[in-house]
Structure formats: C-alpha cells, structure tokens
Image (cartoon, rainbow, N blue to C red; front, side):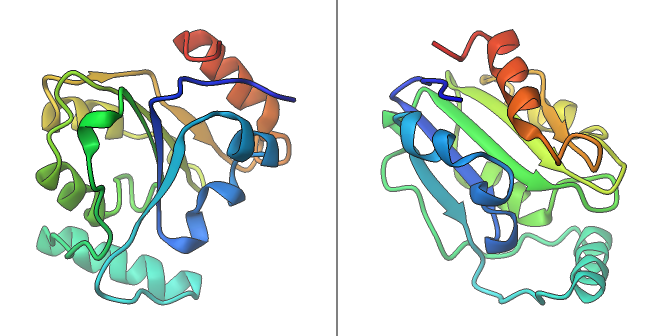
Length: 166
C-alpha cells in the first residue's frame, strides 16, 4: 500500500523502541515525502518494559521535563507534524511536554498517533490542543493490540479521514 503525504511533513516518534518502524509499514517510511525525526532524551531509559513504565510513572508524578538530546533544526519548514508516542499511565511521555514547551507549532497541523496496552488516546489530544492552542490538532489514531496486527488499514483510514492522504 502506498499513500503519498504532504512533502512538508515531519514524522516524530518518541524513543527508539517506539520509532516509526514499529508502527508504520515500510511504504510509509519511504514514500510519504517527509522526514523522520526521533525525539530523544539526554537520559537513557531502560529497555525492559516494567522498569520503563515505572520510570514513566515517577516522571509523571514529579511533572518532569526531561532534557531533549535531539532538536529540529528548522521547524518552520514543516506544515504537518505527525507525532507518535506510547501512552503510559493514561498520558503522553513527559518528554513530549518538553517537546511542546520547546517548539511553537502555531499554524501547523499536528496529527497524533499512539500505542498503548488499552488506554487509547486518553486525554492526550485535548492536552496537546491546550499546549498548542494556535495549532490545528487533528483526531488522533490509537494502535492497540487489536489493530497492531494490521495497522495498514487503520492508518490508511485515519489519513483519509483527516484529508492528509493525497
């Protein structure tokens, strides 16, 4: 399946375990015409699930703002930001709060997609709308255990519904 997307698109994924390749088919990575940016932190996170989600809970409780180690050189060149993340404990990872504190996405379209064990998008779409009030934040996409075996259809339907597939 091939779905061309806007050339001025930036795909962001949080952490190497949740990079685009774990969610998106290969054709999306090579044919959408945008760039892939991986949001990374200075602090190294555990790769094992339990210690990772425990750390995520600690960061949420503390309202942490982990330091970014990767930076977008020129965000003004992008019209659409696709932002992928795991939903931990009903919220985005705290590094995304740092990301939104760092970048002004006014005038951009922000399309959120997440994975979770069952929390769905929770309140993350509304949270991003409050953090980026001058951006157009679209309906998000949740890839859960039921849809992760065949994300092509879910992604295709989502992009078409948003009017972002050309």
